Image (cartoon, rainbow, N blue to C red; front, side):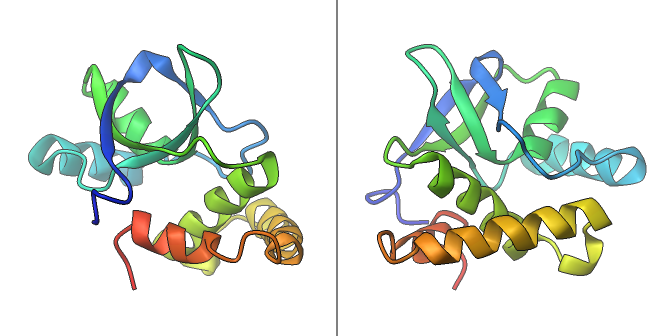
Length: 144
């Protein structure tokens, strides 16, 4: 990850709030257990992505499951990329794109698929003003 472009901060877990109208369900059962085990063994390898809500809290755009696993492990902080330049539409687009990059569309529930298609379509329509957003998501997740 290029830290000169996206510096990583350590944020307190209790300063984080979920994305409003997050269309994605949190992991449960074995999938959550596996994530908890991975984080316990390796730490949080990919920082979450957040945006400031106010001086004391941040909205999670990507990483809800990493936050939940960190809570189970009773971690106090988590690595995060703070983006203060995102509109509500951009924030939702980041949430959608990160889930599309990290998970298979076939892994989504029917409601997640419907929400993803609708929000992704709206985000694509608005990309004329933010053509850098998809590339930014790939850089924040350290993918090509």
